[in-house]
Amino acid sequence: MAYISLPDSNPGILGLLSTYPETGQILLALTQQILRGKSSLSSAERELIAAIVSRANECMFCAQAHASAACNLLPKDQDSIVEEVITKQNLSVLSEKMQAFIELALAVQKGGQFVDQSHIDRVRELGADDKTIHDIVLIAAAFCMFNRYVDGLGTWTPENADIYKSIGQKITIDDYLTVPTLTE
Image (tube, rainbow, N blue to C red):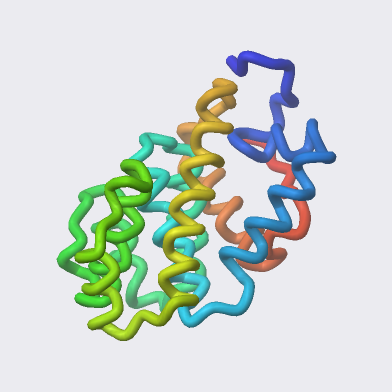
């Protein structure tokens, strides 16, 4: 049960966004920009970074919702990669470049002071420019905030996998411009 009054029909951050639209719209706009705005990273890669950071933060709602979105954005023959990375925490199925991006994101997840020059040098060697580095760090930092928002208020985390599939489909189709309304 949430620590504050939230609608039973909207789990995780969805209840917070709809109950508090004055901050919800700002957070949705930020999410739209970092996960769907212009970037050298694909939307699927950005969703995967969000899911991995959320998993590292043990925010199961965000990890599962963004893993589902990543699955929807990847070619169907690559769905199993998301399962390997999120559930089994096996990064070896990713390209060397994506592994380096994830390592940078996970350093941010631990705390900004855990990012060092070796992280930056490695992603640059693999083709990352300043904008790509910026985007990885911002996604990781933003999802640390989102995860703490969701879990810090004790929001409802559904166990039904179909809910996450529905969330993933809705945010893939509608992007992050509106709050999906769901029921279990």
